[in-house]
Length: 424
Image (cartoon, rainbow, N blue to C red; front, side, top):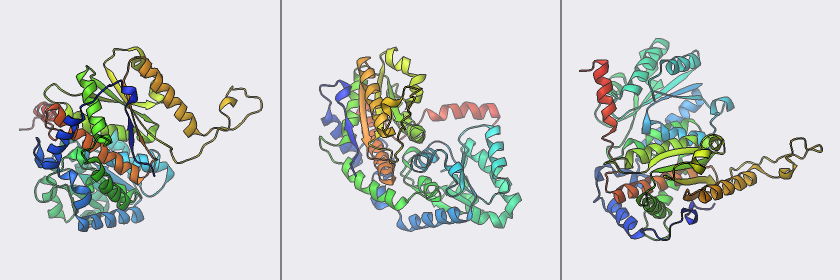
């Protein structure tokens, strides 16, 4: 298997400040930077709780074997990483493929129709739920949990709910932890020193992954191996190259980074990346705005702006060497659609031509392009990308001079919302 690599040739940068990136990485490793009480994710792949990990695997196996539907309740970092893994490694159409229980993510917004639809879909099915919340009082998932808890109690009774409701929350405090202890629900811990957007390799992400049939042993082994790689202070470290390149382009006046990715299976990887960078960098009126673009679907809508709009953009094309499946274009004798020029070619080959053509067009149009390439969609490459982006994001935040591990601005909308709803 090849290792994740980065190509910065298309960024048009003569030099990047790797010394500053190394200094920022040193702050992270030494625990001397801002927000250093939330850097537990750095040591997590090596030092995770093995006993709890075994319980996560057992719960995932139980859900997978006994369950027809699994509802995962969470918002932001409490669901984006797990959904990214499942859609990348299984399928965005996982429920139609019928590989294990049908999976439904809810509590990530405020929509009565979403809640009603999922309730209808799980009706009459054997159901487990996993509610993920550090406090248990975040409005969106708390509302969804109240509704699904009511449904579960009416369907299975309080005794039956003890096996079927799984809680991922604080180890000792909070409304959800208190309720779980009172009702006898099994609990998994969100570590105190790991924030939501960095929590995908904790039970927050691992339990839904295990229930979906993802090999979390392989995930953690690869995360450990690659974290060691990305913490090295050397000039070939792709995490340092990425962070330093982004910082150079930001310093040169770029305001938006587009995460361009191939196909629907990568959509939630992009969504996870957007939260990771948006919440980590966007402070003190600083930071690149994280946006995303699906190649080639979104180029039929956003492509014109990327090509000819205001030159405030940089682009990072994220792709795999291969998707791991072979789909070849057949030959047709009458060639009515004029596509015999690609007859016999595999989709991987066609996509590579598209990606190269897009990259050249955007560079020629004045959009600097980085390219990040992993081997193929699998447990190892997913873990590799997670620790790569986490490390590069922390380094980027320190290079900007902000705390990459807090999110004070997120609280502002909540204050207004609670006031309008009459919360005292």
